[in-house]
Structures are given as C-alpha cells and as structure tokens.
Image (tube, rainbow, N blue to C red; front, top):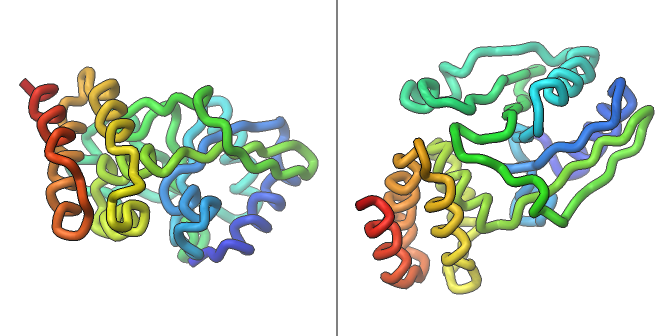
Amino acid sequence: MIGTKDQEELFRLIADYLDRDLVCVAIGGTAMMFSGYKNATKDIDLVFASEGERKAFVRAIEQLGYRQRGLMDVYTQERRKKEGKPQLYARGEERFDLFVRSVFGFPIATKEIVERRDFLGKKELLIRILPKEDLILLKAVTGREKDFEDIEALTGSGKDVDWERVVEQAIRGKKGNEWILLDLEQTMQRLRKKAFIPQKYFDRLYEAQE
C-alpha cells in the first residue's frame, strides 16, 4: 500500500527520472488521496494524452525498478476485451495502471480539469485531478469490487453529489460503449441502499439506452 506522504514523495522522485516534462490525469484511488477521500492505495491510476507521454513515464519508473505485468489478475475478462486497457507496472505490491486518452473506452477530457499538483525534479510532472463525480463514473466503469467501496466513500449520503454531471458524462461517453450506461445504472442501484439518488437520473439513463 502507498500512503499519502509516500505517494507525494514517489511522484517527486519520478520527476527526477523523467527525460521530458509531463502532464497526466490522476483517477481512482490516487485522485481520492489528493482530494482527501482516502489515505492509502495499492494502485496508482494515471491517464496520459498520448502513447509517447506514457512511454516517457514508463522509462522513468523502470529506472526505479517497476516492471510490466499482465492484466489477468487485476481486471475481468470482459474488461480485458475492451479498448482503452491500461498497461500495468509493478514493484513489489505497488502498482501503476497507466491509460492513454480513455479508460476502457471512456474518454478523459483533460482540458476541463482545473485542480492540479506539480512535482518538480529534473523535469516537471504535472498531475491534474478529476472532480469526484467523474471518479464515481470511472470507478463504475472499471468494475472492480474494491472500486464500489471507493464509490461509497465518494458519495456518502449522495446528497452532495452532482448526479446530473455523472449521468450526462456517461451519456456523452456512451458512443460505441453503450455498456457504460448499464454499468453506471447497476452501480447506482447498489448505491441506492445507502445513498439518496433521485429517480429522474435513472430515468435519464433508461431513456439514453433506448
């Protein structure tokens, strides 16, 4: 597991090994730690705008002892068949999940993200952080059981979540990936046992699936 302080120190160290300045987007537990929703994670999830930027990041972490591993023990067979799969790099029990442009086909619009963290070393590593509504949707998309626990932490009672943004983001990203709507609807149904989600947002998902 990587704690909040360890994560910050690791990113600063990686900046010392980069051969170019990089910008990426933090998702998953990484973004939750930056935003104060959790204090440790096993995997660091990042999204890059291009394959070249991901390769530059990989060159840096390989110098720190991280090595590529397969997806089989982490993601279901259904997820492994989809476009936008990550590359995984691990060192001991620490792991990076590195995506390019999308997460299993769901596009990440980096230009809309304003919150950021800068790590300065030999080069600059700039990490943008998604709002919690986008994190909820992406965790519904990745579909791991531990992701649902994180979704519960992000939603709380559900009253301070912008469900309009969650649903509209899913609808915008559904082209060629209609399963995104189904995954989100199933997640929201599970959440309904603990969180308040108005019926109108379920109705929007059903309409978009027709």
